[in-house]
Image 1: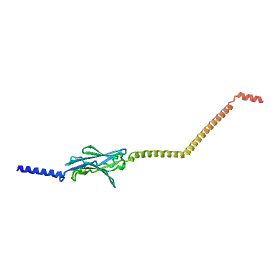
Image 2 (image 1 turned 90 degrees about the vertical axis):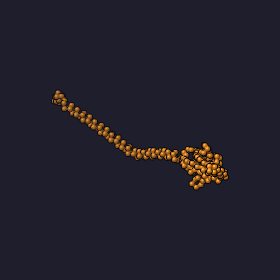
Image 3 (image 1 turned 45 degrees about the vertical axis):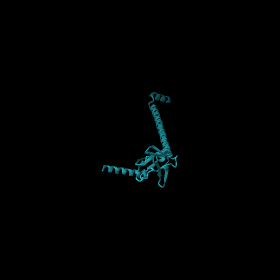
Image 4 (image 1 turned 180 degrees about the vertical axis):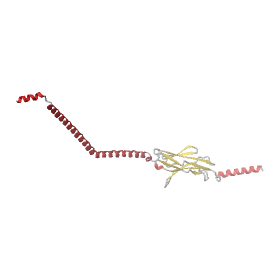
Length: 232
């Protein structure tokens, strides 16, 4: 009985090997992972999109790494596996199971959904060729930061300019009134000075008159007698 079981197992293994050799029982299974989102600063000139994969039951040969991108109304085959525009796109391998797509001369026109595909061309398994869920690349526009700050500066300058012009106009309108008020105050001051001078002059005249009257009233008696004697 034990020998029968061993013979059965050997036969099963032999059949599996034959079927695997002809591709009937290819069990190659690939899983691809990508970051869902990636954002680039407006000053960035390059972007590096990563792609990692794991393979089970596949041949030891290196797989093909494919890259595509989708816009709202169209798609592009970037690298399949050779890159159509090698100056713009380059595929790099950081390790055996980690690859990346480098995008040069990055602009906002490169905002799209990028898919990484891994394909074991020698395998007939439907799972030997898989893509990730895609990476949504977004590059910030310049006006998100610099133009916003510029708008704040321009608005502040316009506000200061408006305040200055308003102050000048108000001062120009109030200037005649201020001059009239200043002239009236000067005239009142001058009138007060004249009135004070008149009062002082009147007081001096009254004092002189009082002194003369006092002298006339207090003349000596002998002066009066001499005058009478001479008239006689």
